[in-house]
Length: 352
Ligand SMILES: *[C@@H]1O[C@H](CO)[C@@H](O)[C@H](O)[C@H]1NC(C)=O
Ligand SMILES: *[C@@H]1O[C@H](CO)[C@@H](O)[C@H](O)[C@H]1NC(C)=O
Ligand SMILES: *[C@@H]1O[C@H](CO)[C@@H](O)[C@H](O)[C@H]1NC(C)=O
Ligand SMILES: *[C@@H]1O[C@H](CO)[C@@H](O)[C@H](O)[C@H]1NC(C)=O
Image (cartoon, rainbow, N blue to C red):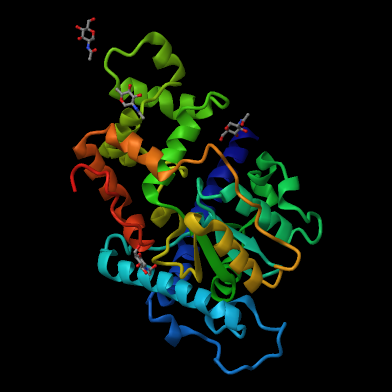
């Protein structure tokens, strides 16, 4: 009995592997066409003529050929952002980076809203709790109306959201082709410091201390106390920097999603994002998206008033404390995010 069960598990694992491999190549084909990065004016599937009575236009049509005058300048801004990504992928996406096959597991950051035909790639530390709440409101069929009534821990329960990786290949491809795909990005070092502060300087949740802190202290601190080795609760930013830039780190496992690059989480050189929102203009970009989706009359993005927010000055303070070598290595690590999303090299870096 036991053995049969084991055999069955083994068989099904093999089946799943074979299946995953074949699924992957199908996705590759479709994404290959998507990733040719022609100027969007050429790949825009919608004619610019005023084809449709107001109200029946889709979010994509309103984004690529706005019918409302007040949306024209936003459309141009987002065109420029898309061009910037396309250009960066063309110039810097080396063959090894252009890799391969996107498999369903590469799509596990993509949240789907069927109702409004939206796909959101969530990036931790870029207002992702609030955007997950928004996706729950949008796809909840009236279950919620106010995003802030959803407790933050509930927004992170994966079964509360529909992920693109849960669909079959035909459904995935259909959604990638016809839904409006968006993500929100942030200055990479500000995001990194925000992740560090949130996971290593607060005491409320010890899971990151245990999982990463103890390892970091053991490897990078000389003369660590028994307590520090045990709890991993007081990781210094320079130790965190050493961990991130150590070649061993990425060989062991992909970086944790809180400090993984947007490039690796959302695959912007393979998936053509229609709208790239920025943390620096979070409310404007979010409310523009809601307007496109036709829900702005009843849904607004929550106003953001977090006083503990990591700022540029704070980021500079943390970076001034690490060596020029580590600064340069960290810049290398996050370089594609800097280029792709048009963030300039920070003035506080010593090696510049
Ligand atoms: C990139 O940033 C520069 C300066 O910050 C700005 O002038 C330019 O318009 C931006 N380009 C895009 C595509 O956002
Ligand atoms: C602590 O973090 C873990 C992993 O991120 C999470 O599952 C857990 O709910 C968190 N606990 C609290 C009290 O926030
Ligand atoms: C570690 O401890 C030894 C013995 O107490 C001491 O000589 C050494 O300077 C310490 N090293 C560091 C980096 O603090
Ligand atoms: C910078 O380093 C000093 C000395 O190691 C430390 O006392 C200080 O807390 C650090 N500051 C920051 C912002 O990490």
